[in-house]
Image (cartoon, rainbow, N blue to C red; front, side, top):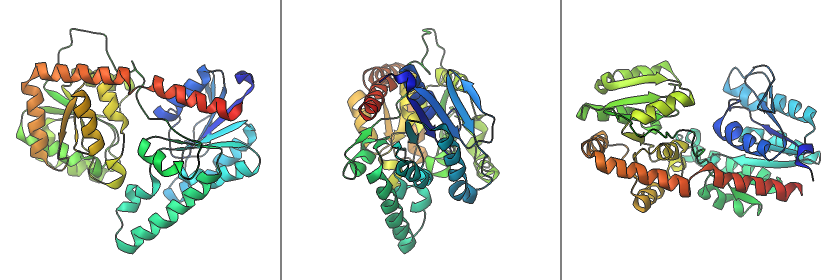
Length: 369
């Protein structure tokens, strides 16, 4: 079958049109393989053609209720008009629209980025309410997962859950594009700075990062957007904020420059169920940029550092322990360089998108041929 004649439609409601996993990795890889790639997003922007791929925008939801109960059907209406050979969706709120596509005889892939019943909005509830949410969300998601043509998961942990439900389940890790954030320059001058790149929320350790700055003279680069003024004001009220360099939302080029001058990258996720088995993209992006990582002492993350000697694991809720790890890296530049080299080698050998791209292309071929 000629891939140029196969129309593929990815669709999402909460993700931006240039989402790194969806657009920059999956869609771009499939386009290189010759597929006719179309992407439907709910961002309220105009349709466009970019790098040979078509992007279609529908109205951006004004609140969470609209996003969950109305926007999915606007996305579905646009997706149906495309009459694609294969549909690939990325969000649990799109399960019912995706089932409608399935009932119309379409092939449908569900790309599972998170373990839904273990997400924060469920786990922050207490007692019977949380148990009921876990019970119904898991069964609802399992109902769809069992019926879809194939499933893609973003971590091996999530794959183990779904493989019992649907044997055509492939784990495609969200590993970095090999040379996107790395530099070929050899005369790099490091500053007395560490960095954090990504979404800023309390359970990802923003307050612990800032408090850790009180115990030393190292500065912290933050590349990300605070979701609320209240959260940012609380972070700014901490004594350590005077050592924060707040870059706000940053382009990939800006992120690359910040990583280049930093001595380490921070990933201080707190111990929620959806975090303990996570593979945060930022962890591997730091590694791809030859940065040592200061990370939470979760079992899977400790296995990476033990195998490759590429960072230091700490209690993510102990700012003083975080500060000691920063000081250890700052005071031992040769050790830090070795950790950075080890991190980069691990990415080149294993933790890179080229490896995952092959699995994605093979899955598409098995479905369409």
